[in-house]
Length: 257
Image (tube, rainbow, N blue to C red; front, side):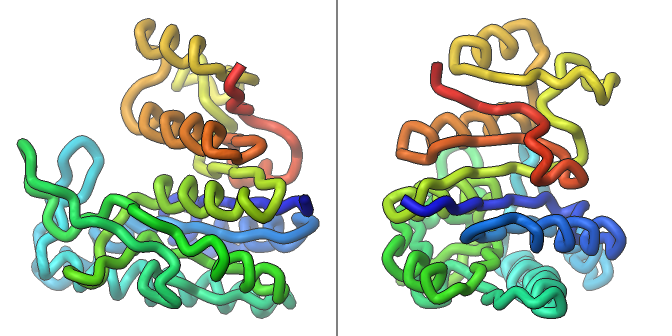
């Protein structure tokens, strides 16, 4: 199968013009087919505040009521997404911005209420891999916003790491797929205060060990869980690295054994 790279970039990277331009320049040099998935949470929080809408977070997850859903739709599906698409077009890359509703590419179920009511938040149920693969085969770069779709509820706020993993899993049916999570650090670190203490490789056994030791904690836990899930579903390789190092074969490689 032909190679394909799915890049996921965090909100901070795409929300600042200098880091966004650096990212898009590096992204444009990646050979072969590719897709980009982005966040945008800081911008959503900032604009919600300007509109007098309170942002509520639980364990790093955004509570999304009707008012906040309107904000994230504007920010993720509009401001951030179209800024990235425009930046890629100026670099000669044919890009198409997508939410899960566009072409019905990502369908979700509204998250059920257990101990916490997250509101209009989606858990991915199905990805239209054929539709995404058709776009890629046409030479189009999908730019995926962290919004999925429910026939019953409409647009749903959905974690960007999950969107990236589900997109990579879907495309792995058609391509030899690598998933790259880009964020502010050089990789998963032994010591969060030492940017050079990169863990080169993580297996499920090491993941459990590092969790027990407190080396891996917080938001890195679900990121790695998504990574292992993607590998088990057919993704060839998962890399966690710094956006500035994109394409340099650096960072942390996640493997199953």
